[in-house]
Length: 593
Image (cartoon, rainbow, N blue to C red):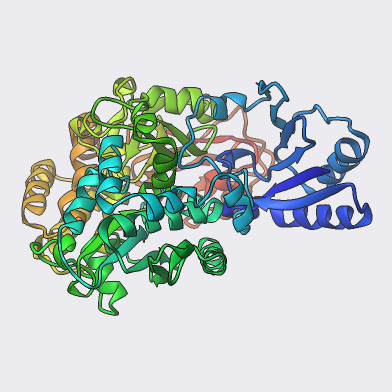
C-alpha cells in the first residue's frame, strides 16, 4: 500500500501544511485501501514547505510548495494512477536503486545525517516508527550489557563534544558526574534554544523526540542518574506536545519508569517549560528555573557535576548532543569519529537563515567550509546578491566576513575569527546588511535578556547599546569606537556567566572586520549598506515615476512635491527618512542613496 507523508513540523504548518493534510485525509477516506496517510517532522528543506512525500515501495518522491489543489492532483495522478507528476513541484526522488534526482537533491545528498537521521522520515508521534529504525536498541544494550564506565569510555572514544556551544568533551563531562556519589542524580536536557535564527533543537524534538529520550536514558546509566528533566521553552508548543506523547508511549513500552526493560534500572523524565528567558540557556540559571527560582546564574565552583539541580550531582547536555548518543552506541565510536576533523569529531546541524536562498536545516561533517554550507547546500545569496558575512553563535557569537568563507567550521577554527560555533545558528548576510545595525540588533537582544546580577553586564551592555543606537541615527562622535572597545573588554572580564562574557562578541567582530562602516557612520554620517534610514536619502527616479501620488499621500511631513500624472520630487531637507514612500511605491521608482 502506498504511503502519503505530510511534513508537519512548525515550518510546514506555518507554510500551510494543515489544509494540505486535511484535503489528503478526505481523499484517503474516499478511496479506502489505496494508501495510508501519516505525518513527519521537518526534513530540513524549510524553503520548499509544505512538503508531501509519496512512497510506493519502489521509490520515494517528495513534492514541495504543495497546496490543497496540487495535493489533490498528486493524489489522483501519482497515488491512484501511478503516474508521477514531473513538474516544478517535484523536489526530491529516491529510486529503487538508491539513486536520487530532483531540484533539491544536492541539498540532502551533500549532508551526513546522524542527528537528523529520522527527521522527515518517521512519524514523531509513533514510538513504533522509532523502534522500526532500531530505536531503543542502544538503551537496551547499555542497560543489559554495559557498565557505566563502558558507556563513558565509548562516548569518549567517539570524540563527541557538547553541541550547545562550548564544545566540551561529552564523555569527560559524564565522567565528572559519575565520579560523585549520591542517592539522587539528575540528567538534564537543555532545550532552551534562544538564539535568533536557530531552530535545530526544536526541529529534532518535533521530528524525532525518542532519540533525545533514549540519549538521556543512556546518560542516566553512565552516571547512575535517577531523575531526568527536559527544560523546553514554552514558545515551542509543538515540540512539547510531541515530547509528552513520546514520554507516555515510552512509559507504556517499559522504556521509562521502574525496572526499565526488565533490567532492574529505574529512571523517568519530566518536562519543565521555560518562560523564554535567554539567560536560562546557562545551565546554573536553568537549574534555578527548574527549582522554581528566578533564572539567574550561580557562582562556580561548585560545578553542576558535584552540586547542580537541588545541589545534587547533575549532568546537563543539549538536545543535539543527546540525539547523537543512540547512534554512537548502535554504530560504534569509531563509526562516529570517522566523520569530522582531528579534534572536532562527528557532524553538526546548522540552521541556515537570512539572505540565503535555501533556508533550512543542514547536517554536515565537522570541518565543512562556510562556502560549502552557504553556496553548495544553501544555494547562494537571494536575488543575486553579494555574500557579505555570516553571523554564527547567535547573540553570543560574531560575524565572519566573506573573505574568510573558505575556513572550516569546527571548534578550533571558528573561535580564531572572533565568533563561536554556538548551537548552530548561521545567519547569512548580503551587501544590503549594515554591520553596525547588526551589532546593535544583537546587543539590544542580550542587553534586554541580561538577568541584571552583574553590574558590567547590566549597565555596560546598556552603555554600548546607547552608543550603537546613536551611530545608526547618525549622531556618533569621534571617541565612540574607543568606548565600545573598552567596554567590550571590561564586560567580558567582569561578567559572571556566558551571556555577559560573550555579549560584546558581535560588536568586537564587526569592529574587527568592518571598521570602515563604523567610521562612515561617525565621520560621513552615511550608511555604506544603505540600510540605516536615518543616514540615507530617498530619491525618486524620474524614468519610473508615473505621478500616481501614492508616495505623496503616505508622506507624513509633506516632503514630496508634484501633481498627478507628472514626475514627483522629494525634498531631502524636509524628509525624515521614515521609508513610507519606499514601501508604498508600486513602480520601484524610489531608491535610497
